[in-house]
Image (cartoon, rainbow, N blue to C red):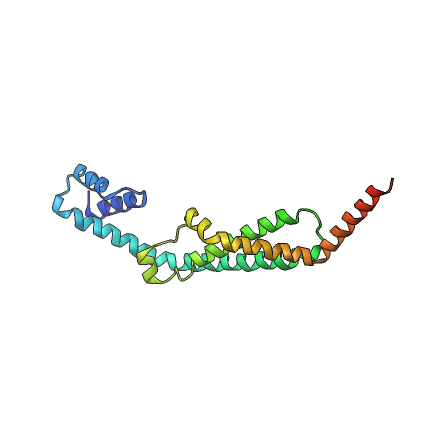
Length: 176
């Protein structure tokens, strides 16, 4: 095999998640001199980094803008628009869904913040969501967003209709 084909094969193996010792075993099977292993693996990693530096800035910036836009839209929808629609049932469920949506989109936008910079791409590449960190970091904001959304529903006109309905039901239950 030619050197370029070997480097392409190594790139494919690295992208597939192979470890260095697996790649070295592959190179031994291809009957490559062991002195060339490090240089071939390094050339493949440089080729991957070059590709990442070309494609990740646009992707990461676009992803950041999308998640930040979703954060703003979810916040406006669940905290301002939805409470004005006179909804009386399912307030708790809507508050929970809204809090989780706002927290998740906010966490993802923070995760992708400045991920389009060259030094970030060289160190990390593409940000990955770790659920353990998400639950740890987003638990307090989720609770706060839940109370903000619930308060918006309670102080809105829909809650007054809900109280009026409960009062009418109580009065009807007292009258035989």
